[in-house]
Length: 412
Image 1 (cartoon, rainbow, N blue to C red):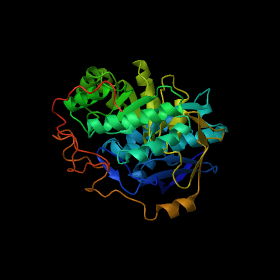
Image 2 (image 1 turned 120 degrees about the vertical axis):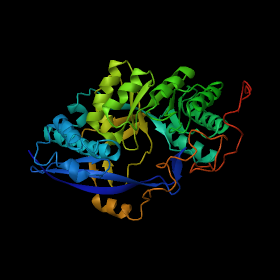
Image 3 (image 1 turned 90 degrees about the horizontal axis):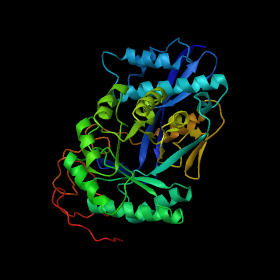
Image 4 (image 1 turned 60 degrees about the horizontal axis):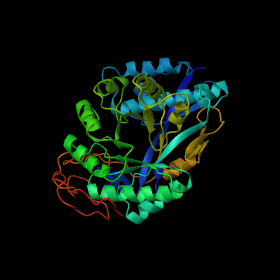
C-alpha cells in the first residue's frame, strides 16, 4: 500500500450561540473546522482534523510511503519541517496527517482504531466544557442541563476576568449537575486561558476555593512558564492543568521537571502519535493525561490504550457539519463504535455548503485567537479594553489585585 495524494476540506462547527474565553468571543458561534484526507493506491482514505498550513511541505515526507508505518512517518514529518520548525499550526498539520495515517492503518487491519491501539474498553470518561464565558446565567444553566441529562458529572467553565462572576457561575453549574446526579457532588474546573499573572492566578483561585472545591485550574499563566505554573500549583489546592498549546514533546519536559503540571493536556489537533508520547512521559511521572478539543475522536481511541487517562473534553454534543462520527455520549462517557479506523465519514456536499460564509479569524481582530493587550496586567477585575470580552451579565466588582474580604460561609 502506498500514499498517492491528499486533499483538504473545511467545514464548520455551528454552536448556535456565542463561544469564547477570557481572550475573546466568536459572537456568531460559527467556527471553521479544517480536515485533511489522505489517499492510497488501494482505495483506502484516511481522515484527520487539523490545519492545512504548509500541507504541501509536510506531505512531501509522506508521498509514496506505506501509510501503515505511522510512527516512522510521524518522525519523518518532523524532520521535513526541521529548519523552519514544527511549532504552532504546522504542528497541527503534522497532527492531521498523522491522524489520517492511523485511520488508514486501522481500516487496513479491519479494526476500530481503539482496538488496534490496544484498548480493551470502548468507553472513555468525559467532562462537559461549553466555551461559555459570554453566556447569561439563564443560558449557562440551560446549556449544562443538557450536559447533565447526558450523565456528565464534571464541568469546565471559561473564566478569569472576575472572581465574583466566576464563583457565581461555578455555583450555578455545580447546582445543575448536583440536581442531575441526585445529590452527588460534581467535579468543577476553571479555564483562564493564560489570562493571569502568577499572583493574579493564586489570588483568584484561592478566593474561589474559600467556597468551592476546584478539581483543576487550567492554563492559569503562560503555557511556557514552568516556574509560574509551579508557583500556582503550590499556592492553590486545585491541580494545575496545561499543555494543550504545547507543540512538541520537548516542551513538556521543563514544565514537568519544575512541578508545574498536575494534569497533562494535549490538543486533539496535534495528532495521535504526539498524544501517545506525551501520555507515556506523563505516566513516567505519575501524572494523569487529558485530551482537549471540540472533536477529540482520534484521541478518544488513543485514550483507551493509555493507563493514565483521566477524562476527555466534551464540548459540543453535535459533530461539525458534514462529519458523521461512530461515537455517542452515554452516562457521562464517550462510547466508541466498531467501524474500522476512526469511524469518521464525510459528507463533502454538506461541508461545502456550510463553509460558505463561515467565520474566518482575521489577523489583528478581536476573538479568542488574539491575546488581549492587557492580559496578565489588568488592574480591574473586568476589563472592556484590549480585546477581552465583557460578558453580557457581568458587573465590574473592583480591583483584581486588591485584598478580598472573607465571604460569608454560605452563599447562594
